[in-house]
Image 1 (cartoon, rainbow, N blue to C red):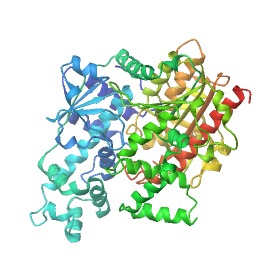
Image 2 (image 1 turned 30 degrees about the horizontal axis):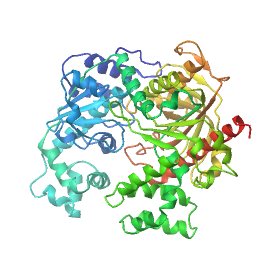
Image 3 (image 1 turned 60 degrees about the vertical axis):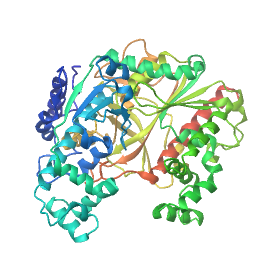
Length: 567
């Protein structure tokens, strides 16, 4: 479990990581409180006001969105690589309830009695979970202390419905009414209840790591791939395009399912209470905004499927996808990374999104290639997954990585295309020929800007960055901050060279015998005050950059297939 911290890390963050791993060597639970001082000393960009008495609401919201809703009742967090690991240690998690997080894909299970099990895919999950828990506890306890001073003349149950009481409550909590309003938005009808729970209990979380061996991560990755191979035995024989993106954008572009259900989706929208989306649809209909109608319908489909009224569309879409050679494969016993297998020979060219083709796609009927599209993993899990896929698949024709990133020179919704990646995990600088440039994205991007020839930095974790690091990074010309490209490129190196990837070297990946494409869309501007991921999300307007990137990836795959098939 020991690790060498990259030289790009500051001394404070190096100390933080050493402290985390030294504590987690213990065979007994360790108190998160032990980490609070070293956490605050990092001066994290996501948690700049950790030392202050006043709550840091942006940091608190960031943690709320990335931890399960059951956290107010949790006292112990157990970390393990797979369900069998938990069972061997006496935790019968198979019968625990799922406890999802709004903005972090991590399989968590709750026993209903204060113990939360988190299935981790790599050490990156440790470096994400532990700082998140620490920040959550710091901010919870700040609010707890301040709530003890609330006079009985301001009942928490009435604050949400009384503007004067609401404003007074915000002042007593030493936050703005805007910040208190953000908490009310997240908690909704549970706003008063959540404040009551914070007032009633001081948080004192404990954590335990069940197994720290690298082989256990590999075993979990192999179990994840076994599940895919059971559904698609052809994976080991047929040519393969690997795509790391999300589980919906590629299939939406292929099937046209949302476009076929347009009437039902618009009816759902009109009966909803989302005035901003209703106004957006009206503007799209009269060409008052340049938004793409298909992107809008893809978004409404997801919203509809999450409702009781539209739940039937989940099964209908699954059947539609299967008829077109698209298989969705959820993970079962390991980490939460869904996979899609797409058989290019079964795609119906009449149903695909119009942006995918400038002409006839009938040549795809001759293709024997598959697309393996996975829901992008976190950090080092990307290396484990791609390395394992390369070991157990047919010829790799292309690898494409699409995901969110922070930008130091753009705005949210922009698309960044790097040609250099500095990886904090391996300490390598990777040079490669990106299959994409700005011209591949621009025709399909309405609102953002495309920034190609960028330099990306693959960081250790979201809380493990501070102003000192960002200053060095920015002066060195790195403007694209994310977590997966470096680990993926370490796996790419091993797919091309007969040895393990090097450490702390400049690595030239030009000449790799398959396509490499990396696209990032900006979800975060960390150098802008209040513009971290805790301050907001891309929501519907992230669809523009997401689908512009997805269209570019599929058009690239189609072009390579056309050439390979001699068309």
